[in-house]
Length: 348
Image (tube, rainbow, N blue to C red; front, side, top):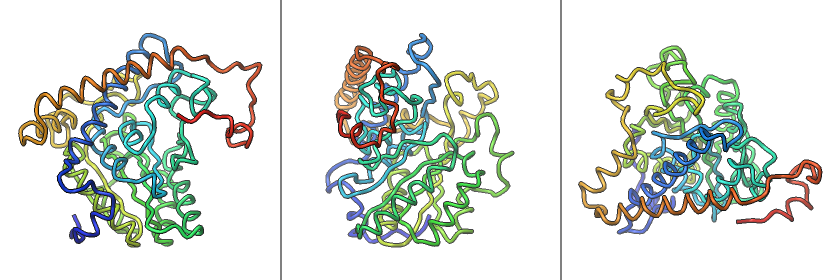
């Protein structure tokens, strides 16, 4: 890990005021994401969801720590991928947007017209994701360059990717571009140890993915992605450095995907022994235990966070299920960015 920045600079990155425990705030987003995705997985198995379901189980600490420390109000950009439910919501994506997209509601951000993970609100700093791994990095680069041309000051852009995505050409080209342009990019690489079913031993030869950062003149961080405090600390520093004009920052979190590639995949290729290895634990359980053990929140407060998440998820899913699907005979198939369509979209 690189040397820490002065505290005044870190506070300028958007850290909560003194006395606010960031780990409890992050835990709240982690729980909400886990409860929601468990519900979505159950609906998928019941045949209530068309398409695939891809869970972020085991990646919530890494995801939430980035999303909650970016600031949409100051013009920051965040592009979360398929396992970033926690980070998306922490950045400002309404839970109802997620529910509506998975359940095909015409009231959702994509009007029920796109795949259930391809959602976003570009006008709110959240571009809709592209399934081709690596391709979202140049999109965020472009958004950051546009903000630069508009004379925006102190903004940052976060984008996430998995270990498999670092093998794509788009990853390397975009990281090089960001470095040359000194863009305020924070690239989060969730090394969840498998690119679908391909283990990291067959993906790259370097000892650590963070080693790749140096080849592009980018600062790299290698952390335990199951340790919430480590994730919060690394992204605090990375965002502060990006805002301060130090160029792209690449944070690699080592963790284990605690599910198959998608709910259609039983993950039989992942040996059970992986769970007992370093970085193989459940970040949610680890965060809960640490918060309670260190007295950052009491048992009643933690129970209330978990109860509230259940209630919010049930309410959002029930609402989305009650809404109509798009009518293919009446739907306007113009791009959603078309003026008359975008103006007619209901913002939640």
